[in-house]
Amino acid sequence: MKNAKQLECSFCKSSVTESAISGPDNIHICFDCIQLGNQMFESYQKKVGRNKKKPSTQKNLQELFDKVPLPEQIVAFLDEYIIGQERAKKLIAVAVYQHYKRVYSGEMKDGTVMKKANVMICGPSGSGKTLLAQTVAKLLDVPFVAVDASSLTQAGYVGDDVESILKNLYHAAGKDIERAQRGIVFIDEIDKIAKKSSMYGGRDVGGEGVQHSLLKMIEGDVIDMGRTTSSSRSAGLPKIDTRNILFICAGAFSDMEKLKPDRVKQIESKPAIGFGLTPTEEVQDSVEVEPVIKKHALFSNLTVEDFILYGMIPEFMGRVPIIVQLDDLTQQDFEYIMTKPKNALVKQHQHSLAISGIELQFEPAAISAIARQTILFGTGARGLSTIFEQLMLPIVFNFTGKKIQSVTVTESYINSMEEADLLVVKKRATKRKTVS
Image (tube, rainbow, N blue to C red; front, side, top):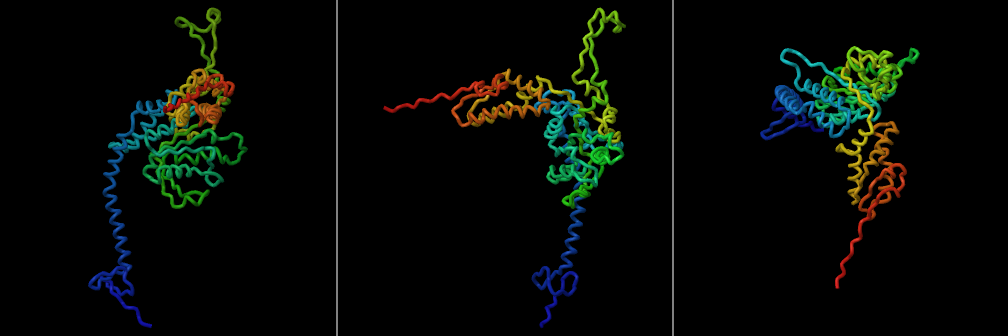
């Protein structure tokens, strides 16, 4: 067997049997020199990248800071999609503006650092909690993820661990870690992880334990998304810094009235006339006092102590200092929701039928009837979608594809759901001209 021809590397002068790169004039480069050169190149790239990254990052942050809308502009944008809840929209607008001003401005020259302030939204089901957070994220063009707190469990138990929240945000940001670290996380049903008082000394897997697991994440820390015991698919995920992520927690807290009955027993009475008068027997004889129960007394001036009494641990509430309270929607609110916003249900269904060449109209009395039925459902604004799907089913099924010019929904149709109560106008047949 013939011996393999020996070659000499032109760089390290070592003898090799195979050349990685060969050139003219008997020039050869061995694999070891290629590998060493590659390592030197990567080291140089990292060094150059670090030197150029600082001014570029500062410039990008300044551009982002200039794009943060003022609180008035945020409220104006929210008004286009959300009806009512005026005070809540102002609180959200200021909280979001302050948060992103802190994120993009960074540390002050004197070393002052603005403290992070997360948000707690409480209000009845269907009052617009999720929509508020979604709309703000849309305006700011930041990654947004909504999670259900009731599906979370403490680390080491079956279920979604808290790190799954950040994984979802990371994927929502297109796996851009820098963008993910400026996103918004909406944790719904937060009242479902309140501390249970009847655990008989057992582990509160779905309550207090989850609150403790969320503390570091909500306050701001570097979290290893790859550290999980529930799934092996998370291996290789980067660490994420949550200091600039805005956490918005929300819940109905529907049982709070059982803990603080005085909140629903607040009474308004007719004011006395004059100075220094008190509701004595003499005044009560002269002025008829008519007590009126406040409709939204339960969510009037809620404090941190109320949430702690409900079952939220003090450490958790200390990290969500901004409390936003939503009210039940009134009949007028429902009527506006159906007709005024950009994504109003009436506009959506009118557009849908217009594609089929049919004009859809609603009588004002029909809109009022739908609002009254929605209030009876007790599911808030989300109940409107259910009612609209029911009332539109016969219209779409029976009239689409036929020679119908317009359909008008009446109050009688809302109450009876009979096709005969609709006002239907058929298209006129066009006469063909005869050629003589």
